Image 1 (cartoon, rainbow, N blue to C red):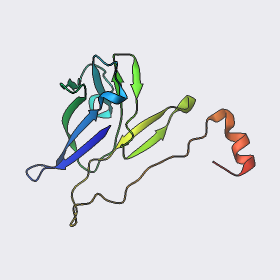
Image 2 (image 1 turned 120 degrees about the vertical axis):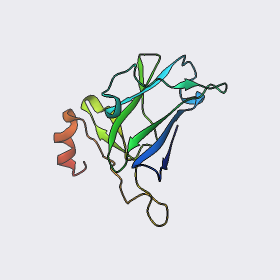
Image 3 (image 1 turned 135 degrees about the vertical axis):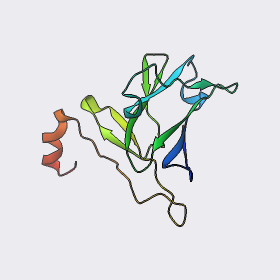
Image 4 (image 1 turned 90 degrees about the vertical axis):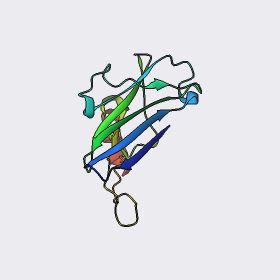
Amino acid sequence: MSIKKQTLKSKPVCKVTFRIPKEMAPEANEATVVGDFNNWKEEVTPMQKLKSGDFTVTMELSQNQSFQFRYLVNKSVWINDEEADGYIPMPLAKKIQLLTPYEMSNAGTPPAFCFYSNFVPHFLQNRASLSGSR
């Protein structure tokens, strides 16, 4: 999967292109990107299916703000994007991605923002804390 970000000089937004390659969802007939930016409404941001079988959509999102999101395929299968800026642990060991559109710096690189979590399910927390790993 891929996420491409492009800041716009004309306004304080970041153009974000979400893409699900055919290999990640070979049986997909439809896909949407669902998250904070569309109030988690599954039908609001459909992705276009390309001739290659990939799905894509481009959105303008506020810069320097983080958004939680996931992909929904065939209205029933939730999938994550490996190229998300980070992950937020959820109950039952599921994760939600985090995306942070950024303003370009001098070198054109994003700020040093990474939010990765070593999530331990609640039913293993006591065992993990006893062994010293979390």
